[in-house]
Amino acid sequence: MTDEILHKNFEEAVAFVNSYEEALPADFLLKLYAYFKIANRNFGNPGSKTPLINAFKANALIQAQNISREEAMQSYIDLANTLKKKS
View 1 (cartoon, rainbow, N blue to C red):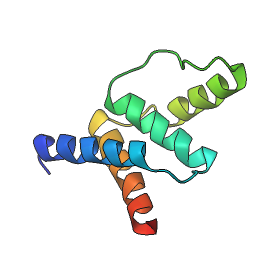
View 2 (view 1 turned 90 degrees about the vertical axis):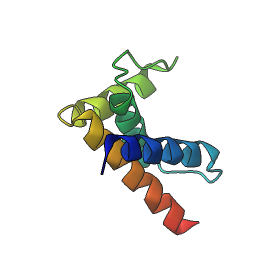
View 3 (view 1 turned 60 degrees about the vertical axis):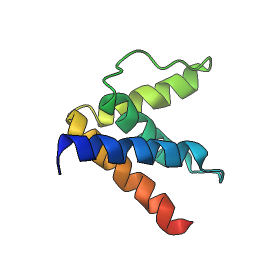
View 4 (view 1 turned 180 degrees about the vertical axis):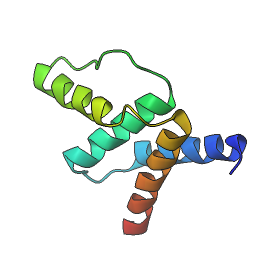
């Protein structure tokens, strides 16, 4: 898959997830969060006002820290596709 196609598919997956209206499990959301942050090279601190949520987000990033930007994009796309299958 070319970089252009990967980026396009990633953007479509992000749009789909952002428009998804059903509640999602916290572990699923944390994976999406980590993959999104890595894919966008956004390594800043989590921005929640709740320390416990920041800890979970930081842990999700640590668990996914050894994947490339492209792998993060593809993993995000794959997770979004699991949602599409449920819809």
